[in-house]
Length: 338
Image (tube, rainbow, N blue to C red):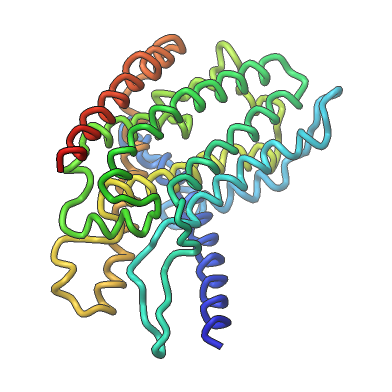
């Protein structure tokens, strides 16, 4: 009976998380336009509903009813599979993120985490790596040289920055002695990892921008060189999946950054509250951190100019990679003598 109730709770949590992820990603498109309007001293969306709040719904309806188009000579199955993989992998990332403390209902403890696997952080990196296949398959199956070049650019960028990103979290794994995200969050009860590993955070943050193809690393798309990049030939909801997966990835990246470096659901003075209230406040605090980082992604987009492709590769291989290796050497030596 207890096992069945836990299974039902996990199913409900996964479904709720799915809806929240889609909701935040949808309204990220609205806030992105508002932030851009603020930066450029203009109004932004304000026609669809009060304050323009129905704009994401209007955009979704428009995408659904747009005419489907598939170029001659394209591979039909792979053409559909590309955006599907991009969207699916983006949604799967947050399954291992702990969203709050364990809560007790009717004497049964429920973990606010869909799957607390013992290789949680490796799961995140594995799923993110699979997302590259969606972009590459979509670009190749379009039978368009601009799409293929955009896909090659995107995949080489993501693979290059994944290496430095993976190395940057080695000190956290050494410090917490676990790959389990719940253990990493618990280890930050007193001191957040941002204060222990600031250089690792800087490397991880820069790599997160490159992994999500956000400015200043939005090179897979370039109107003057590649038209729309890997999704040049896509229309309707297939294009919507590619565009929407970018915002889902931004939400997932913000959640992982908050979990790894900013204490997850922990906040100062958490022990002063009763257990139930602390659990609810912890969820709200974690979402507050996530929303802050989503705003940070948008702020950077409308503030810093994009890199050239050679500058992007130089930064990834000749700056971030040596810094990440140096980080491992330093913290490896420190942990050896502790």
